[in-house]
Each structure stands twice: as structure tokens, then as C-alpha cells.
Image (tube, rainbow, N blue to C red):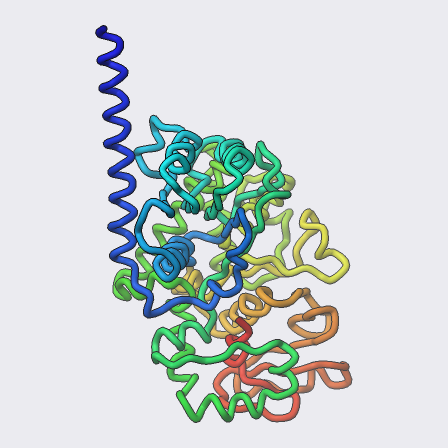
Amino acid sequence: MVLKKLLFLHRHIQICIMERLIQRFYEKYSQTGTDQIRNFINVIDWDNRMIGVRGARGVGKTTLLLQYIKTNFQPDNKILYASLDNFYFAENKLYNLAEEFVKKGGAVLVLDEVHRYKNWAVEVKNIYDDFSGLKIIFTGSSLLHLKQANADLSRRAVMYDMPGLSFREFLSFETGLKFPSYALESILNDHIKIAVEMIGQFKPLNHFGNYLQYGYYPFYLENLNSFHQKLFETIQLVVEVDIPQFEMVQTSNIIYIKRLLQIIASSVPFKPNLSAISQRTGISLNTLKSYLRYLEKAGLISSLHFQAKAINSLNKPEKLFLDNTNLMFSLSEQQFNIGNARETFFLNQLRTVATVNASKSADFYVSNKYSFEIGGQSKTRKQIKGLPNSFVVKDDIEVGYENVIPLWLFGFLY
């Protein structure tokens, strides 16, 4: 009799906790704005039965999911959003939540921060296989590897990698205007026409410097004054929590990753001497290569390889960059260099839509075809003279000419 009462009480408590999970979803639903929705929402094919959205901390994955829900569903028993870092999952199985949800007529289960739940891949696979009428949408860290998960989700889930804001998206948020994106070939062939049309609507150079400082992460909209403090805290979480969780790095070694990141931040872009860095940091050469891969997967740095080496991440990178210019201001404001920022911006925007490699004749070799030299207003075409399909990309100009293209225009690729 006592056991029955205890079981009944436990069941009642679990129902109350689940109801609180649902209430929290409704609260988030009501607080989600839909005035500013990123175009990435249209990149995803929402008809797939299992969808994964992967991205670095702070790029807006949670907001995107909630905006998708709000623009397509009423808050009812057909859809449920749950963040897997919720206390509910400390004592409750994800599978049991899905089972209860399906019994009550649930059709779409949206799971945020799946990497916060131990053995998430196994349970998500079982949910997918056991409840054929249920659609599953989840978000995860950019460090998340489906092929290395405990269950074979790579054959079931359609994955999308979400970048931060492009300069185009930042401008839309700042001006309220809608701007189209352009294919790389369109910018190369029609850059004068496109730029002339653009500058009739806004002054790109009035906004470009702001984007470099704080425009890549959409959480700048919450409070600009505390943006870099929040970004620095985000970097700390990536290094202290995310990388150790995914890559099994011992806590005692986190200090070495921090030291490595600081060296990169104070020097980028630079040609790394891995042996010298190894001696300076006290990190063995093989471990150093692994740490560089972890930092890149986490969205903190970018490496540039020559074309023949690009397929092998174990090879020495030709150059190392911070992932985006916002990180430059948070990690190395005193050493901030506009020339470095220009190259970082170009690489950050181009790599989303094209293959970007190092070049012996220019700064970048893109899509196995185009050579680009990056510089300021006084940059000449001397270095790329005679190179086929070559371009000079200049900062501080609104409109280009011939094979000279404004740097800001490459922020309209996505």
C-alpha cells in the first residue's frame, strides 16, 4: 500500500514537472519576436522528418527554432519545444517524454541543446525508429559529430550548419531594409551594377566598421553595451565546457587551450610555426594539432591551407585566423589591426558559400579558380598582375571598377 502511494506520488510529481516544461515552452513562445527572422530559416527543408541544426555558440540557433515554431504552429499539444539542459532531464528520460508526448497527440518534437543530454543520440534514434509519425528537430554545438555518435543518426538526420550574421543580414537588422543575397559569380561579374544600386539605399561604409566590431552574433541586439562581455563569457564556455565535453580534454589541460587561443588572437593572421608554438605553450606537437582542430570546430578560429593540403586537417595550416572579426575585438582589442580584420572578414563570409584556400600568389584562392588580394583604398593590382581570374578587394570604397571590388560587397553572399 505504501509502495503504491509512493509510486502514485512520484508519478504525480513527474506530471507536474512535465507540465512546467510545457509552460516554459509557452512562455518562450509568447516572448519570441518574428519581426527579424534570418533567411537561414528558408535554407532548411522543414519537410524532412529529422532535422539537425548545428552551429557555434551565440549564432542564434535557439531563436531560429522558436521563430519557426511561432510562424508555423499554434501553442497546442501538436508541438513541444524542450531545451535538454532543463532540470527536467536530470531525472527523466528523453525517450519517456517523447512517448508521453506522442500519446497525447504530439507530432513535432523540437529539442534544443541536445549535447547537454548524456547519450542523446541513442535515445533520439530510438524515438525516431519507434514513433514513425513524429517529426524531430534538434540543435547542437558546432562540435557535434553525428558520425561519431553512439547511434547512426547520420543516415536519419539532415544536418544544417548555421553561420553567424552576414553583413547583409546585419544591415537588414540595422536599417529595416531587405537586401538580396548574391552568388559569388554575380558579385564578380556585376559588382559595379550591384554596388551602385546598393549605395542608393544606404551608405555601406557607415555600417561596416560596426559589423566588424559586433555584427556577427545576433545577441548584440539584446544589449550592445554588454556585447563583448557576453562574447568573452561565451568564449570561456566553449573552452572550459564544450571542448572538454566533446573531445575528452582533461580539465587540467584547459589552460593550454586558453594559452594557445591567446597566442593566435594576438598574432592573427599569421603563418604558424607549430614547433615554436609547441615549445612556447608546453603542448606536444600532436596535441597542438588536435587543439587547433577543436578550436576550429568550435567556431573560434579558422585555418587556411594550400589546395593540396586542404583535405587533410592534420597538415600544418598555412595561416591561422580568428573565426570572425568580433572575436578579434574581444580577445585582442589592443593588437587589433584593420588589415587582419579585412582578411578575417573575407574568409569568414566566403567560406560559407565556397572553398577557400591559401595562395602563393595572392591572399586567397577561392573555388579552385579565383585569386583575391585584400587591402585598403591604396591597394594596387601589382601583386596579381598576369594572374587569370584575379581580383583586388578593397576596403574603404563604395564602388569598384574592372577587377577591383569593394570588400563590403562580399558580405552579401548569404
